[in-house]
Amino acid sequence: MTDSEASTDCILFITGIVVDKSVAEISEILMFLYILNVLIKNLFTYLNRLKDLDF
Image 1 (tube, rainbow, N blue to C red):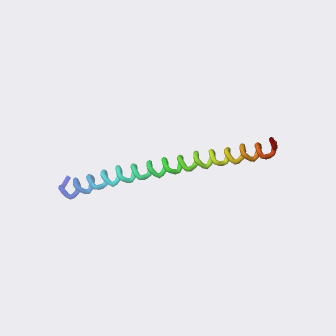
Image 2 (cartoon, rainbow, N blue to C red):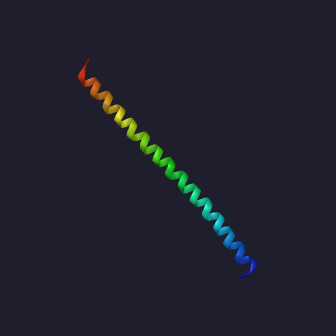
Image 3 (cartoon, rainbow, N blue to C red):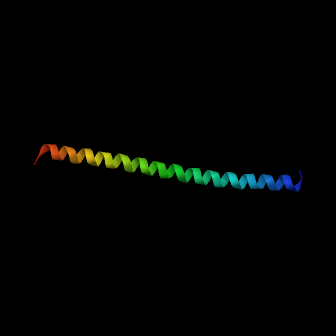
């Protein structure tokens, strides 16, 4: 294994970590947006039911 091969492996390893981190962050953001979306939908459904009851 030459020096250039070793450095290429190191770069690939670091790049892999960076990609893994960004993918994890993106999936966390998507999960957060999904939960937020569900909460907002539930809130509007609840408010519409209250409106229909007419206190």
